[in-house]
Length: 286
Image (cartoon, rainbow, N blue to C red; front, side, top):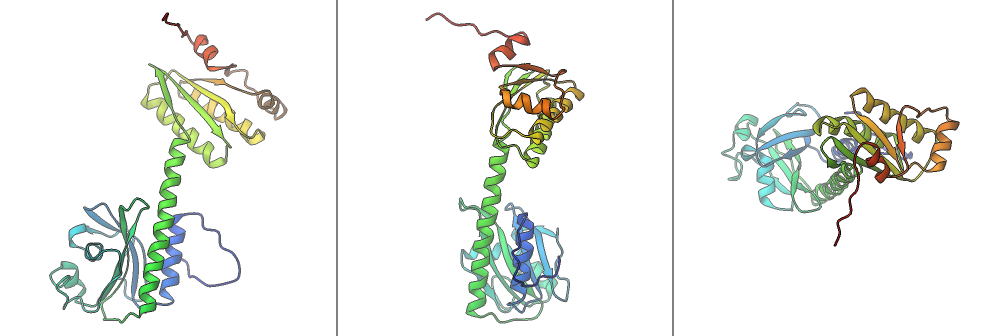
């Protein structure tokens, strides 16, 4: 974990991990406790995901314990408010826990972190083998940072769900699926599409993948090159790529960029693409 300093420049966070590390670093400036940490649980196992030890290394990132035997569970059982225990050996909530015996005593403070739907994610906690006092302001700090983490984690979870929906594979027959690409194509989306195309092609044993481009918003050199990359990767694993919905400006951009799609099957729409690979639409009389 890199040292944290306050300055006038604006910091742009790139991940939940960066936010979590920064929160612990900020809290360490205002709470006199040896160890601050964030833990995540699945109700069976409690894992330390982020940790800051000032002096004594009480915990390490990746440490795990059965959830039922942890101080984090005690905090979650306590509810939404911060739980402060001045002496772990004296509290009936913690004196019988193995973790208390291993520490030899000390103080603890913790508060749960939740997803937006109310499901528990984990906890943010402070721990020391020596007793420490906390002020009302420090309790408020724990509440505020737990709320902030809940917000960031919920946003990250929602974004991951959106990203998974942004690569929607639609199987339509044995060996054939459709991938509609919608919106703006960024480098991250290209990587997601490429990875998903290869994984799904193997899972579904595809012979053909029809890639519909009619929903692509922006056309530039990057988009054109990305399409060629997807098509090339598919051919390398034995899947025939079929492009549909290619608007004139996309075709012109590909030509101007020196990108050749002559080895890729291109059709105007889905119906013609299906017909090209041996399918036909049959109307049923009413």
